[in-house]
Every structure is written in C-alpha cells, then in structure tokens.
Image (cartoon, rainbow, N blue to C red):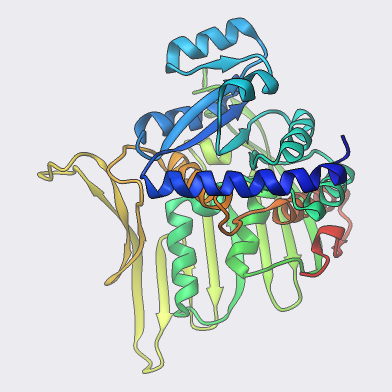
Length: 388
C-alpha cells in the first residue's frame, strides 16, 4: 500500500490511538510499548528500563524472528515474543513501537507502522544513506507519519545540566563548542544542541592523526590482553558562520580506561569546560563553579543508591525524574526518550524527529568525508530542512 493512500485511515486510527493514550495517562497506567528486534544489545536497554520502572513502562511483546532466540528472551525477561509484526499486533495493543534493528531493516518496519498509524521510536541512524533519508522524508515525514528517533546523548544527565545552564542565559550568547564524546552523528547531535543550531549551512574541514594506544574495553567487553593497537584520532572544524563546532573523537574513546570524554561550551560571558563553569558577572565579580553530581546512598545516607541530580552553585540544573531507580546515565537518557515518546504518541510535541536525525547523519557523513579526503566540504540545506 502506498503511504498516501493510507493517510485518511491513519488519521482516524491516530485519533483513536491518541484518545486511548490519554485515558491511560489519566488512570495512571504505565505506557505500553512493543519492541521490534530483541536480539541486539540496544533492545536490552529497553528491557532493563521497563523492569526497574514498571509503574511507567510496560513491554507489550517483542518481534524476534529467530524462535530459539525469542525463547531465551522470554525466559530471561518474562516477556512475550512473536515471530512477526503482524503476529504481535494480533495479540498486543501497544501505544507505540520501538524499532531496534539494523538501518536497512528499520526502513521496512517504519513503512509498515506508518501505514497502520502506530507511532514509531526508531534507533539511530534511521537510514544508512542520504538517498534513504531523503526517501523517508518525502514518503513518510511529509505525509505525517508518527516517527521519532532515539538519540539519547542530549538527554544524559550531564548534557541536560549543561543545556539547562545555556538556557539560563548566564553564559550569554553561545559561540563555540568542542564535542569529544561520541562518533559522527551522535557528536553532531550534541554539537547542534549546544550551539542552538538548526539546519544552517556549514563549512567543514577535517584531519586524522595516527598513533598507538593500549587497547581497552570495546562493545564486546574488557580487553583480554595488554597490547598496543593503532589509534586514529579524528578532528573536524564546523564553521556555521557565527558559531563554531569542533569535533574530536577516537574510536572506543567513550569506553576507554586511558582516554577521557570532553565537552566545552563558550559564550560571551563565560564557559563550561567539562564540569568547570566560569562566568564573569555584570558587576565584574567572576564566578568559578562546578557541575556536581549528587548521589544518594553515599557515606551515612540510607536512602538507597541513585543519582539525585546535578547542582551548580546554588542552582539545581538537573533533577533525576526516574529516582530512586538505579539506572546508569545511558539508561536514564534512553528512559527520557521513552518518556518523551509516550507524550508524543498521546498527541504531544515531538522531541527528535526524522528531520533532526537526518541532519545529524548528514553532518556526520560530511565530517567523515572531510577527514578522509582532506578537502573542505560544505553542508547545504537538504530537503528535510524545507520551511525550517
């Protein structure tokens, strides 16, 4: 079925779906969501979050094509699995679906969910090429498909705290940021948030530095032996005209025991440098503060162990909305995506749609091109930036 032909039916289904979601919220019921793809490590984040926050989230089944793998998940997590999306929808009534499969497979599911009017929260990146991103925009976004993307990095507690300080205006107008946290589109997402950048054009230059370092943890786990391995440090300069973004990343840096993540933001009146905050007030009194994590359960505190929030001077910049659940930062960020998706599925505002995700993937690809070619490249306005 073509997506245009399904929009009238989808609109009716959307109204009913929105009404059901609002009723559930009024009754204090947990949001019910399904997961498409349960075999990857990303899907397990959602399973863990739902397990520790049962009052907020409930898993309404998973699509796991491999029967043996599905049985393993059922035994480990106490959830129901199905071999296909059709089978799941015959037995479950989710408020939305999380699409946690490879980029190529995700597109097919996004089309299926759009046709039946079921909101979708898809993992990053939503597609693997610019051509596919343009296709999603022209065939889904333009026609009102309910899709958001689970880009969790801006919702990490420390990033929420930094963004809160930026929004307060105490740093003045923001002009620069250096992001050395994660790779390509993740880095671009943080960069644009810190700078307040939308879909502006940019001139991008890049370079790569080769050396060696001791191999540390990877996605597969801790290192099995101590040995030197090749290191590639990628750097890029993104000139947005009146604002500057610096990208700096080494593969597996965010898991390394010997390399630190770094993020700084500079404004007209001050800067954030990792956890240090420097501000010059209008009365010429300089402030030197820090972003301080406040945990419960330390020393003589007996309230349980969890993150309460992040404070700077006398101001709370971040309060953990999921306390006292014991979740680490990446899980807190993904739980925020789920919480925002629940509001979106009930008719609320979007938080990171396909347009935003496509722009960050686009910038990531240009960063990669500038680094590998050594040439200056230009980010232009793409089709998903129309009217923005």
